[in-house]
Length: 429
Image (cartoon, rainbow, N blue to C red; front, side, top):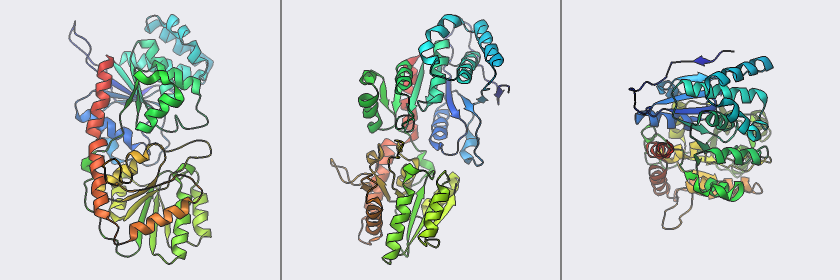
């Protein structure tokens, strides 16, 4: 496989001047349908006039893409991944010729390299060659997993600073290698936490020595794409929306069980679940066995435009997230932020960073939704009670929705959050 660059990019500068700032985004897969926050962040930074380039380690397997992807101007390079020793040695040979001090730098990385596969090491070296050739001055990477491992190696070989945004599965999963995670994070110029919960987790559970490195930069929304409107009174069956990959941590099985309880009690409702995933077949079977074919609809994936239409039709968004048996947990689902921005009341659980957006009245702040315990025991009953509460004509829908929108504008505006991230990178130069 050869390296595919969709558009060429090396910057030029007048003789004697410092190179202009050019930031690389390194991602495991690009584009990825479920990672709308990455595209939103890139678009916000491009709108601010930043010069970006994107490097992907793996090809996408998605069959659908959000239309916002077409707005991204950054050139995209899909890096080759070789699987033959001869090809790996060829990559090392080119690096020896093109990267100053390659042998010494490569040897100094041994403690990191031995924890990676040979093809990943070769891809990291290929990334280093491309970053240098393309005039990159800073690297930003999402997820402290494969993309950050390769980035750490590439930046050590090129003397480039890098920042890494940590999320959820890269922290809260039984497969996380704590030694590798700590080494990569200590090599980063700054480590970004997307929630205060994650910031505390990094300092408490990963390494307290990161205290001078970890910064809070939340994932943001392009607010103009989610204009607010007051929620309507519930008229007819309660319209419940849930969105996300159909996997254990989303807790959709608890939502279906709650719908079964409410239906049995005679409460009219319609539940629409948007997404696909490994447990889709099991969830469909649960719906059939509960006799809920006319109540619960599994819609499959939807584009951003289609999702906005779903939000407009919804009376409430349900996010009954749990911590999976493998430790996997959501960081803060983007759809919760989108619903809050649009004026759709939310019912969610207290998983990781969710209480920083959806919470009861506290510390002088009004409530922004209904927050439930994430404990799987009795979760279906708690979800059912919350949906019944939201359906009550006396529940303060407009008051809660307006408070939620205010939180989104204050803490989750992508223009502000992207500027914070850019400022961290500027200090690294």
